[in-house]
Image (cartoon, rainbow, N blue to C red; front, side, top):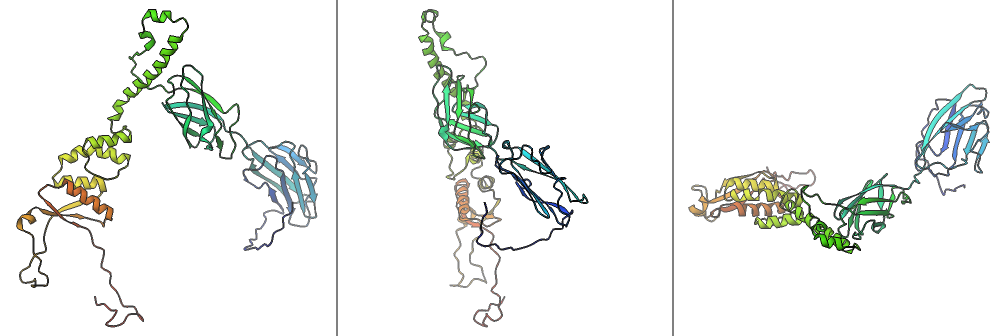
Length: 439
């Protein structure tokens, strides 16, 4: 369909010297083009930049190695949109495939031609890729925790509906589960469940809430798979089977199987409780404890620092807090704590007050009353090598204030001062005696 443009402006024109008399132009789809519709035609033009013209009888086009055009004949590419138009210097060919392209396939087009008389020849090949119309496939699913399932697909996917993951128990007794959240990471999806699944029970998961990156949704029969409910690791020599613990006559009297099914329900709860008991050791492990237990561990250790820390910072603090208590009241303890929280190196300096200097100080001008000798003996300054932010100053003062000896006095925080900037004269702007400064 012709398109009428309101205006057209050419910013730049580059002259390209054709290496041969015959050139291949106006290719549709173009070379290396991706996402070409499956029912698209293949159009191209062979142009002779000289005066001989293109030899129609000597022109051939191959599609993926199969002859598609031979001197005006279009085998299997002669649909309603096909056409062959020849002018004095141009041969335009449009191939209309009898069957659409296959999804995500790479189509190779080879064009062979020559000028009338056969003096100049053309043999050029290019490729393009068909669009993705293949639905993503579910490859496998595995329970990675009591309330989490990981699903693998054969390509990268996007989640469009968390409720699109449905779970059906295949064994009995088995608790019903439903998705609470889902997170995609390339071709993997981690689904968080609303409750714990039955250990060892088989579940069928059906996926309808995802698409691939091209927007294709899942379709049957590749939208479901079966996995087993997560069973926590347990000691090999432990046997906690409630059914075998019942007296023999009770088990023998269970003709209908109701008692066995009831005990199986209790067995599921027992297995989940035993799994939580086995994980108690992780709670006290600083490297594996959940964040909420890290807060409790720090509270139990009497954490005196009110800083907001991430999970890694909390683990590090819990591992060194006891040593900080041992070094409390020492200069080494202050330096180590500042280095831990702020990553700064500090130096503890004795306090030197600005007092009256004999022969230099002037009464009423720079007379500063110094501290008592006892205060000066137990006072100190902290010096850093780089300027601090206001937050860093507050944190450093809090750390030093807690770790310093109780009888000492933290007087001042010494930071490097910025270099002095001078107000130089500016020709035509500065005024002598008014905006000038001698330095």
